[in-house]
Image (cartoon, rainbow, N blue to C red; front, side):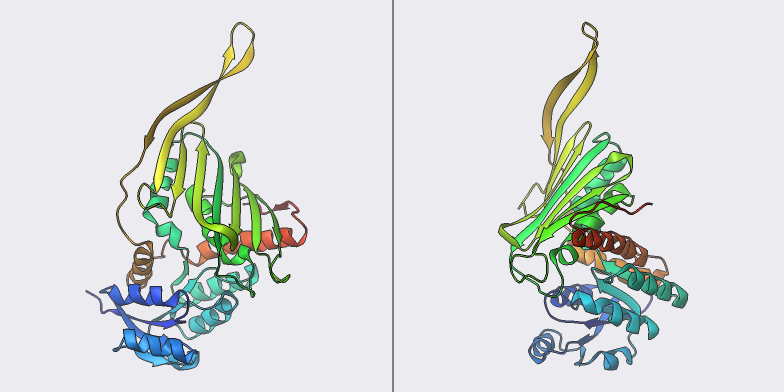
Length: 338
């Protein structure tokens, strides 16, 4: 058995504690260091992880003997921190988005590949048992031909001023759609509005068109009366609702659809609706973040690429950048290609 991989965590704010908890629990991992510039947060980390080394500046952590870093800092710092870590020959896990532009993301991917380092992005929903089950259903053709998808990821709170709702919230749903369909969208259009501070969009409506005419709609906002995390999949044979906040039955498969046939008497198309049972699959009780962090550690130790590798993150940034351009052009339809 290989020795535990020493990991240093950069950032102990909103999401950092969750990463620390999971890395600390993995037998093959040694949460060797935590870096946090905020003194109060650093003191909190010290109280929870007494055997870990603590730093208040990134350079000290990067100059240590750790093999890998996990970056859980504000989005605009992801690229410079990941770049510095790769140049220090560390394996890098970075929360979404990978970077704030395609050029930055491409540089990180190329740098990681040139140095033989693992680069992974925190697209945690690709490790969610519910999302993985839906992908299995799609791959097996259970729902027939996928027609359209629509997702709602909204809440009242965690308002941000440095990035908009597109870059903050929508990466989750973009990564889910690319993962489920196994393809990049070919066109993108986005509209949004800046209600609170006039600087960044609080609400964004994003429309993606995938190959074979599959349509997808994403609604992302931190200005909404209730918290919703729901994805609906409509196919030619069956339909799926995935409600991430449901206490049980997060995935429901509806035997519903429409069959088109020709009426021999009139020679016109007729439609027959069918409604059958609702199936609620039993899903494993596994924490997606644990599966994600384990994938990072095992990728380092085995030399294989993780599921949510740097190129995965780059694909999502390509969609985000195009969507941002569409936002600035008031919903212009932009082509992404394959």
